[in-house]
Image (cartoon, rainbow, N blue to C red):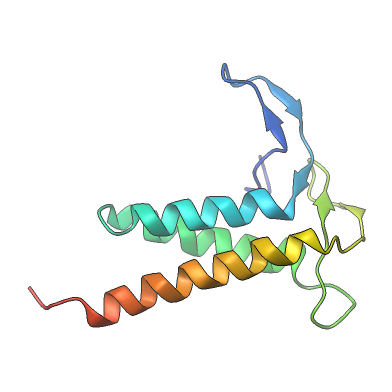
Length: 110
Protein backbone atom coordinates (compact mmCIF):
# COMPACT_ATOMS: atom_id res chain seq x y z
CA UNK A 1 0.00 0.00 0.00
CA UNK A 2 1.37 3.41 -0.96
CA UNK A 3 0.59 4.89 2.46
CA UNK A 4 2.14 1.94 4.30
CA UNK A 5 -1.08 1.41 6.24
CA UNK A 6 -2.40 -2.10 6.88
CA UNK A 7 -5.50 -3.20 4.97
CA UNK A 8 -8.65 -3.94 6.92
CA UNK A 9 -9.08 -7.44 5.54
CA UNK A 10 -6.72 -9.77 3.68
CA UNK A 11 -7.19 -13.48 2.96
CA UNK A 12 -4.50 -15.93 4.01
CA UNK A 13 -3.44 -16.18 0.35
CA UNK A 14 -2.83 -12.40 0.28
CA UNK A 15 -5.98 -11.43 -1.63
CA UNK A 16 -7.24 -8.05 -0.39
CA UNK A 17 -10.86 -8.17 0.77
CA UNK A 18 -11.15 -4.59 2.09
CA UNK A 19 -8.50 -2.04 1.16
CA UNK A 20 -9.57 0.58 3.71
CA UNK A 21 -7.46 1.06 6.83
CA UNK A 22 -8.71 1.51 10.37
CA UNK A 23 -6.72 2.87 13.28
CA UNK A 24 -6.78 -0.19 15.51
CA UNK A 25 -4.88 -2.63 13.22
CA UNK A 26 -2.09 -0.08 12.98
CA UNK A 27 -1.73 -0.16 16.77
CA UNK A 28 -1.62 -3.97 16.72
CA UNK A 29 1.20 -3.86 14.15
CA UNK A 30 3.17 -1.45 16.32
CA UNK A 31 2.72 -3.62 19.42
CA UNK A 32 3.78 -6.76 17.55
CA UNK A 33 6.86 -4.97 16.20
CA UNK A 34 7.82 -3.82 19.71
CA UNK A 35 7.60 -7.39 21.00
CA UNK A 36 9.74 -8.63 18.10
CA UNK A 37 12.24 -5.80 18.66
CA UNK A 38 13.44 -7.57 21.82
CA UNK A 39 15.20 -10.08 19.55
CA UNK A 40 15.05 -8.49 16.05
CA UNK A 41 16.58 -4.99 15.77
CA UNK A 42 14.87 -4.39 12.40
CA UNK A 43 11.49 -4.65 14.11
CA UNK A 44 12.23 -1.44 16.02
CA UNK A 45 12.38 0.39 12.69
CA UNK A 46 9.01 -1.15 11.76
CA UNK A 47 7.53 0.02 15.05
CA UNK A 48 8.91 3.51 14.55
CA UNK A 49 7.50 3.72 11.02
CA UNK A 50 4.16 2.44 12.33
CA UNK A 51 4.10 5.15 14.99
CA UNK A 52 4.83 7.77 12.33
CA UNK A 53 1.96 6.48 10.16
CA UNK A 54 -0.38 6.32 13.15
CA UNK A 55 0.40 9.93 13.95
CA UNK A 56 0.19 11.18 10.35
CA UNK A 57 -2.99 9.40 9.27
CA UNK A 58 -5.02 8.98 12.44
CA UNK A 59 -3.92 11.30 15.25
CA UNK A 60 -3.55 14.67 13.55
CA UNK A 61 -7.23 15.51 13.48
CA UNK A 62 -9.09 18.75 13.75
CA UNK A 63 -10.16 17.92 17.30
CA UNK A 64 -7.25 18.22 19.75
CA UNK A 65 -6.80 14.88 21.49
CA UNK A 66 -9.07 13.18 18.97
CA UNK A 67 -8.44 10.66 16.23
CA UNK A 68 -9.69 9.52 12.86
CA UNK A 69 -10.93 5.96 12.53
CA UNK A 70 -10.76 5.04 8.85
CA UNK A 71 -8.84 5.87 5.66
CA UNK A 72 -9.32 4.55 2.12
CA UNK A 73 -6.70 2.75 0.03
CA UNK A 74 -5.25 6.11 -1.05
CA UNK A 75 -4.99 7.25 2.57
CA UNK A 76 -7.89 9.70 2.26
CA UNK A 77 -10.26 10.15 5.17
CA UNK A 78 -13.37 7.95 4.95
CA UNK A 79 -14.75 8.39 8.44
CA UNK A 80 -14.18 11.17 10.93
CA UNK A 81 -15.91 9.38 13.78
CA UNK A 82 -14.03 8.63 16.98
CA UNK A 83 -15.28 5.27 18.29
CA UNK A 84 -14.76 5.03 22.03
CA UNK A 85 -13.47 1.47 21.63
CA UNK A 86 -10.46 2.85 19.74
CA UNK A 87 -9.23 4.50 22.92
CA UNK A 88 -8.44 1.02 24.26
CA UNK A 89 -6.14 0.38 21.29
CA UNK A 90 -4.42 3.74 21.66
CA UNK A 91 -3.80 3.19 25.36
CA UNK A 92 -2.57 -0.37 24.81
CA UNK A 93 0.01 0.74 22.23
CA UNK A 94 1.22 3.45 24.61
CA UNK A 95 1.47 0.85 27.41
CA UNK A 96 3.48 -1.50 25.16
CA UNK A 97 5.79 1.32 24.11
CA UNK A 98 6.29 2.27 27.75
CA UNK A 99 7.05 -1.34 28.67
CA UNK A 100 9.51 -1.64 25.79
CA UNK A 101 11.35 1.54 26.78
CA UNK A 102 11.41 0.56 30.45
CA UNK A 103 12.84 -2.86 29.55
CA UNK A 104 15.52 -1.25 27.42
CA UNK A 105 16.49 1.23 30.14
CA UNK A 106 16.67 -1.37 32.90
CA UNK A 107 18.29 -4.22 30.91
CA UNK A 108 21.74 -5.22 32.14
CA UNK A 109 24.58 -3.98 29.94
CA UNK A 110 26.32 -6.56 27.87
